Figure 1 (cartoon, rainbow, N blue to C red):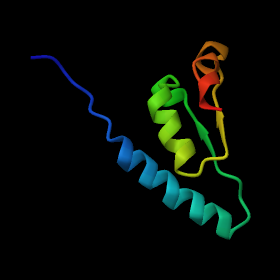
Figure 2 (figure 1 turned 180 degrees about the vertical axis):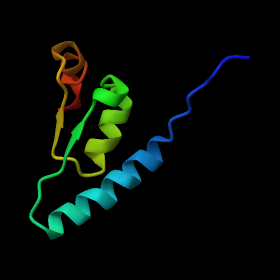
Figure 3 (figure 1 turned 90 degrees about the vertical axis):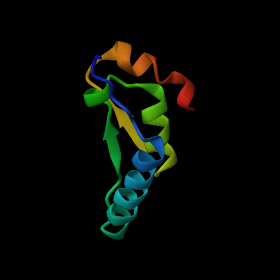
Length: 70
């Protein structure tokens, strides 16, 4: 067949929660960079729900995809 990438959004959120809690212990504000997944909204949403305070990307079109995360 063809390659298929399966993304476990629950695992993404769980990992973000762990990272956010560890950052907070050291007064660090956690920010996720969406470059590696082209700002796929469902992944970014899982990261924000997991505790990431901001999202960042070097490409404006990618950030435009995330306007609905408010």
